Image 1: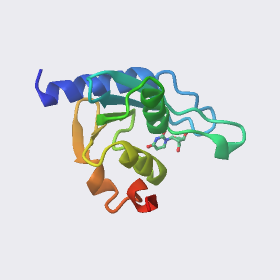
Image 2: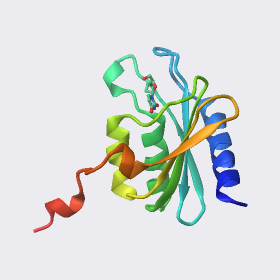
Image 3: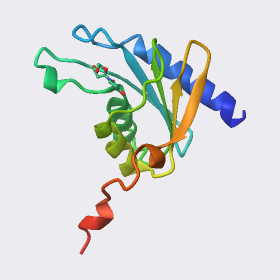
Image 4: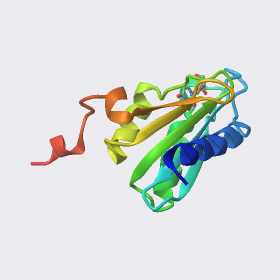
Length: 134
Ligand code: THU
């Protein structure tokens, strides 16, 4: 399977997971699927709360699920929304940068089209854990 096919499949996982979104407040369902270095895939969806600030994005749910399952190296993340053109928010960009500076961020631009961009170009000069080391 080539990269384009793999990313199309990853977006399909993200789309399926968007179907599980809990977003009664925004009514904006998002699904994400993380492809790890060992080729395992972990999914996430946005989970909102009546206390709005407690809501969590699909991307972070997917990344945290990957880590909870032993995968800390991310090759790519796919993001699906019905409208398309959803790229990760600033907080999710920082979280993704923790686990890869080179990961591809794949997002649908319509029903059957997608684009790919590097996380490093979405968040150049991300804050790095290296800065904390003495
Ligand atoms: N949301 C995501 O899950 N990912 C994004 O990249 C953008 C926004 C969610 C948060 C909230 O539940 C809803 O979409 C509207 O902002």
